[in-house]
Length: 446
Image (cartoon, rainbow, N blue to C red; front, side):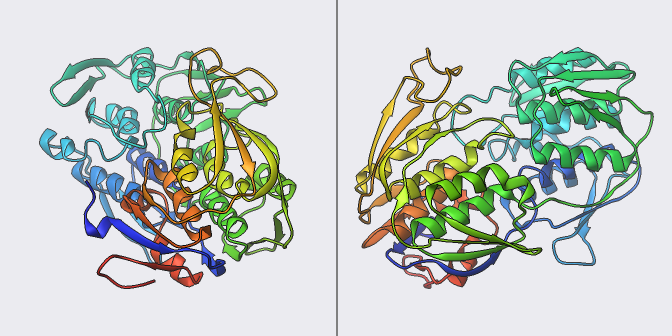
C-alpha cells in the first residue's frame, strides 16, 4: 500500500519546456563509493546525485566505519576508509531489500576485514537478476560462503587469488563484482564476455586512479593484475545517460522542448540515432543536449535492446511512451530483462494499443525466445492517451508512467512515485522547472 505522500496527481496535456540538469550516473556513483573501501586514504567523488541508492550505500559504508562527509563543492563526497570495521548484523539487515548494491561490498570487505555479511537484496522487479553468480565468482577467488539467517556470511581464510572467469552473459553487476574483487587479489584475473558499458569504463578509471592495473581488450575481455595496495581517488562521475534519455523521451511524448544540462553525446550515440529515426530533434553543445518535438508525425520504428553499445534496456520504457504517438506499427524486442514489458498494460488502460508476444520479433533470436516470456511488443499508433490510476512497477517503468500521464488528456493518479527517487534526483523540482502541472493530494502543486 502507498500513503498519500507516495501519490502524485498529474494533470496532463501540457508540453514540458525548460531546462534541467542531470548529475552523476546512478549506475556508477554507488559503485565508485564502494570502491573507496579498497583504498588506504580518503577519496573524493564529485557530481554525486542525491538519490536513494547513494543514501543506502552511504549508510552501509558508515556502518563499516567509513567516514562520509560533503566536500567543498555541491555534489561532492569525501570518503575516508581508514577505520574500516565489522558492522552489526542487525544494522546491516536494516538495509535489506532496499538495494542490490550491498552484494558489491563483498570483495572490498573480504580484502579489508577478511569477512563480510550481506543481507537479502532488493531492487526493481523487472526480471531475474540472480545473485548466485556473484557468490560463485567470489568462491573462484577463494572465498567461503555460509548461508545464515537474513543473508550470507563470507570469509577469506587467506588472500584472494586471481582466476579466469567467463560470464555466460555480459552482466554489468557481475563485471563490477569481478573488478572490485580482482584489483587486490593475488595474480592476474582474466574476465571474458564482460560488460563494457560507459559506467564500467568509468569505474575502471576510478580504480586505475587508485593504483589498479586493468586492461580492456576489444573482444569484451578485461585483464586485472592484482596489486598489494590501493590509495584514494579524486574523480568526477560521468553524467547519467539513462536519466538524460528519459527526459528526452518526455520532450518527445509531450511535444515539448527540454535542455538537459550535463547530457553527453558520446555515451548516448545509440540513443540519439534512434531518437532521430523516430522523428525527434536534438542539438548538442559543450554543456548538454536540447531535445524537442519538431512538429508533425513521429515515425514508427523497429527497436531491439541489447547490452552496450546496443540500445540500452533502460532507454526502452520511456521511449515506448513516445512510440504510442508515432504513426504506424513499432516493434520492440527486449533482450535484456524478460519482464520489462509488463509496464505496457497500464499504457493500454490509458488508450495505447500495445500487444505483447512470446516470440522474438527482432532481427535475431535471443535467450528468452523459447522460454515463454512476453518479451516482444507491437505498438500501434498514434493513440490518444487518457488520464488513469497507475501503480509504479519499477524505476524506469515508473518514469514512463509519469511521461504517459503528462502526455495524456485529463488527470492521472500515479501511486508509488517514491520508487522514482531511486534513480532520478529531485524529479519533483525538475517537473516544476519544466512547467508540469502536478500536485501531491492535499499538498502543494508543482
